Length: 185
Image (tube, rainbow, N blue to C red; front, side):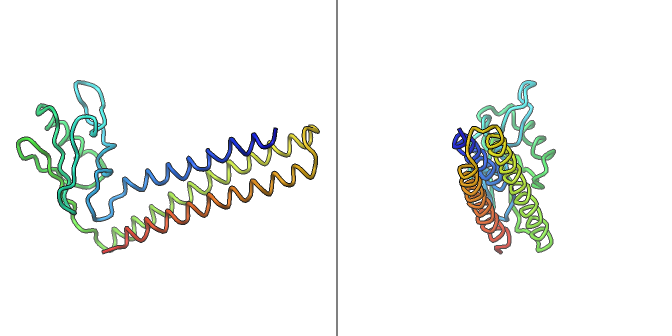
């Protein structure tokens, strides 16, 4: 029964790391990336629609993103949505496409982004620790109910700690890579 607790908690911990990685993709690093704009929602015929469902997004140059909508009528809405978003880029509409020039980051902005990276890493670690606590409580409950023995509970708690440590190390590794990317000039 307890191995079931471990089997359910491990994918949740892995998901916490994946969500953090996805959040990091949306962080501006001085290089153009389609992930910067994919999640922006555009008002399209009264419905908020993800930008990547309305247009082709490409990166023809390291410091430029080109958005080519499939329907020309949505160009103005895309421009407004980008201006409202918090990515800090000014859209240039060239008749059929929207161009976003990604300027190099200032040193101050890089330090701010590193703080954002660290804050997001800490949030992921807290989520993993909360999952560990819930699983440990479930294991201890099973032990109190007599479903498993003391030795088995001890082994399961040790295995739970190893799984937790592995996922926290993964958070550290991914966070350190993103920090290096942000600080890269």
